Length: 378
Ligand code: CAA
Image (tube, rainbow, N blue to C red; front, side, top):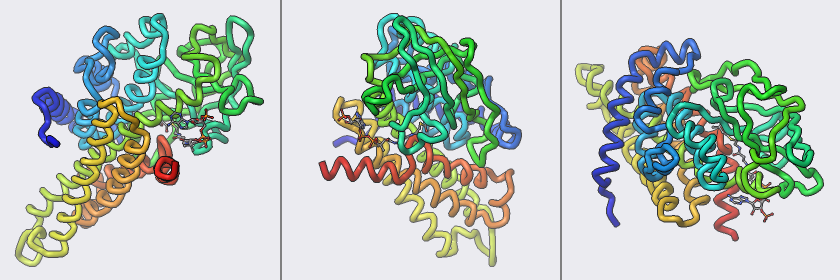
């Protein structure tokens, strides 16, 4: 077993670390104003981050899942919103297109997405289909050479600013999950409208919207895979997506820890730095241990996927544990900062707000436990 990163992995980690320093400047204002980081998304495209796992022949950087996780972790330490924009785009859109898309779909959609010229969004959730993902009410009526799409999607990350959407919809309700399909829908298609931006607790500079489809005509060639493959496509996509969310949560936890550690060595009470007080030392020690354990689970899930082994359980374990560590230790980072932690200039209150969503999206902590339990009881 070798815990040493390769030279290539160290390089991508360093490149992401340097890029994250650029993100720092406006991060508080972007959060406050819920302002999408257009320039930085463009820069992430130029750096290859927006197609990091896509093969070079389709415009990507051709790197592995571990490289993706390392980059996300560094970006999320500074700006968790930028991290989720990159994560939803890569894990939930590009991965499935590359894995299951036809050659024509890859040339037309994957290449500009991987080159960072276009942004992707994954539309699975609905007002009545969150945890119960197969309960799809969006209908894709089969009309021979095209589908007619009707319905509403909720909580769609990159929803307002994406160009290309992977939309999950029910074609044959009587077949249940076996009647579900995934369709590629372009922004601007008649009948496709985007709802107002959600005003969120955290990850405020990423955009989250509902989507409305009213008699939207989608050509048959825009369906990914065989008829009825949509639910399995979504489940497989989410397995990989959960590794991305684990990496985001890891970055949030590690970013808050870095800030708390530095602050504890500067801030003095009772005549000495607070890091000399045992109450603070215990918190720092717990952060060091639990964040490192979360890192190992996350890197292992990425490694398992890169080995071509089944990774659904590993991804759920990484996401479950890392998101809980992120929530717990961002709260502790605020506590270590005392009153300063409660104001925006010190960054930890934002990281605490950003942490919460990692226990909710791409499956709540309860769903991760369900996925893990099903695997171990199989
Ligand atoms: N890989 C491949 N196939 C899978 C699978 C997987 N991981 N999980 C299930 N399947 C298959 C099963 O084998 C089964 O197929 P067969 O009938 O052929 O045997 C089929 O799918 C149905 O499986 P289940 O009966 O287990 O499905 P279920 O309805 O009980 O649901 C669930 C299982 C795990 C609860 C699932 O609904 C789930 O993951 N829910 C959470 C959804 C979620 O994470 N939503 C997040 C939205 S996206 C998002 O958040 C993005 C963002 O903003 C960033």
